[in-house]
Amino acid sequence: MTNPTLKTALLTGATGLVGKQVLQNLLNSDVYKEVKILTRKATGIQHKKLTEIFFDFDNPDASLVKADDIFCCLGTTIKKAGSEEGFRKVDFLYPVQVGRAGKLNGSDKYLIVTSMGADSKSMIFYNRVKGEVEKELTDLQFNTLHILRPSLLLGDRGETRLGEKIGEVLSRIVNPIMIGPLKKYAAIEAGKVANAMVNLARLPQKGLFVHDSAELQQF
Image (tube, rainbow, N blue to C red; front, top):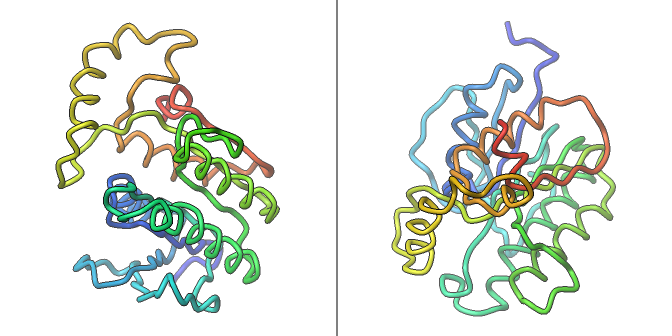
């Protein structure tokens, strides 16, 4: 018999660098009885707790966004999105739309991965968009909102990004000396961020919490 106290989780970005590891952690968690993912196409993953919801992010059906806890790992690059407008849709519009629908349908917690340097007033487009999505989600006033701001993410993306590949190589050289106040700038394994995200959702505290890479490394 299913434990009635177990919760439901909903994840967006389940096939990304962090998202795919968050998904596995959620499926293995003893906290959730069902793990829903919003996806454009079948992932091929089979699990008794997994429910795939085919979702049109450009014409969202708010009634499909129902869960106790929402995990957002959506993210792209301007190159992959094709334009700043395309990037903004994935990194700002979609997370906010899911948040609004979830709040309307009674979601208690929202957790999102943004980026170090997120600032709605930044002159840098990437950082500004990340800051703007944080602000919009904060304004929705979830009982609990966790914002994860990792630095450079390390891991196998399944694609080649020359700039990030160079950054990974350099980070592995300098990471050992990134201590004290510099630790938040050290690159971090995607798996660490995924572990932190799922573990943070277990905490009972309510309110707004912002976590940098140094804190995420502790999980």
